[in-house]
Length: 347
Image (tube, rainbow, N blue to C red; front, side):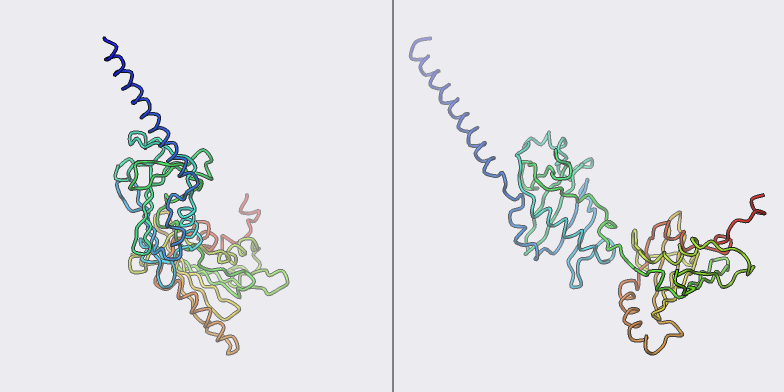
């Protein structure tokens, strides 16, 4: 090789090295410019204008959708039943406030390590958040937790090859029941005047508030008036509505069960009756809730009681609730269940 050829080769090497260095420097500059920036930069300013959040899972299956309606947020897959606004707000804030901590891979072959692969894949670990606002759509693929499990996530904008670590726990991998407003009733035992439990086989248990200073309850239709009743069993029944919550919900039209396993009626001191038709369905339990004015209500209580009846029925009318087994069991009582065990029974 002559001197001229050698000089040309060296020149090419220098130019190549310079270009590589410049390119690497530019990538570092570009990456560092993004640190601290919002992963969805337009979303925070549009929080009050968001109309819908859709969560899409593997094989492009829609897992859940919450939609803003005139009456508040609702769950699309549950016939527009009210959503828990605190959960919706937390999800939207995590998306809007998530800021970039570190650039990660742009190599599609490595996406699965971070859980940010396209949700079109049948085995995708990721979910895609689709946020609709101001006639725009923002899409973010949400992957695995980052190094700080409760404070970071790997994500990738759906229209980008680059994945990132962000500083928020974006938790969206949920089915429709997660988003539902769970609270139905809140009735404390001291608000209850009497309870009547009627089981499918015709057994009836009548319970009344003793109205003493200890707020105890008694059975008023005992077969043996001298039988000993376990107070804790009666308190379970009286306390069942103190935090009455759903696990899931189905419309009355779609619910095909005809005969309830139990009817239980709570007569409140305020003048309202809360009637539950409870069903036993394949190891799960459901209840329809109907509220009405008591037959013996006084005129002075009528307006307030009617307001309460209307308020509850506005929420519960037309729905059947899946309820926790423990709630159902606390109400499903026959006389033998509330009596103390005698020595004769032990022998």
